[in-house]
Each structure stands twice: as C-alpha cells, then as structure tokens.
Length: 102
Image (tube, rainbow, N blue to C red; front, side, top):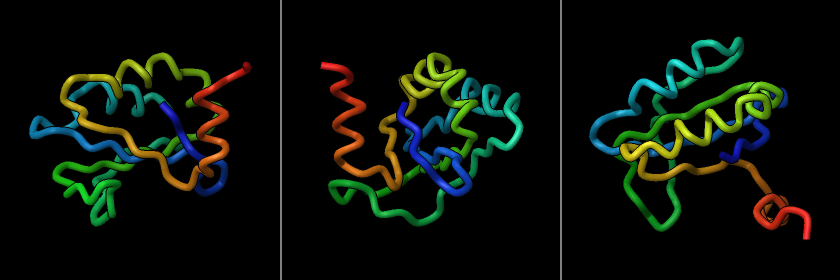
C-alpha cells in the first residue's frame, strides 16, 4: 500500500480491520522493522462518514516500506482488513502513483 509521508519521513497509514482484529501477518512484519509501530488509532474521521470500529495506525520508515512493499501489500490485502487509508498524501501524487508511467 500506499504509505504516505508522516513525521520524519515515516509513512503513515491507517487500516480498518473487521471484527477479527489485525491478524498476525502485519504485527510480525512490523516487529522486524526498527522504528515501525502499530497502534490503535483512536478517533479519526473516515471517508464517506464510516464509523471506525477497529482502526489501527501503522508508521514505518519509507526505506523499510519500499524494501518490503510486496509483503505489506499481501498483509494489507488479508480478508479481515476492510480498508486502508492514507494520510497527508496530495491528490495529485496519489493519481501519479496509481497511473504510473504512461
């Protein structure tokens, strides 16, 4: 996914998990990365007025995200994860990332 620049060059994203929580793949993946964190994301306003049930915030160094992007993509595609939201990403950059080189 889709990390975004957070504080000190750390991507930050929020994922909304279903009732089952966030599973084991993501915590295990983050546990091996120095400077990475996974915390419950208190009160956030979600797109479309959705109510956050089980919302977690993931923060990690950009280099770590890039190095393990395939593993993060697989972990965040798990059936118990309902959605992944990016923070502080300009819409133009999001469009460029989705389109790629055309």
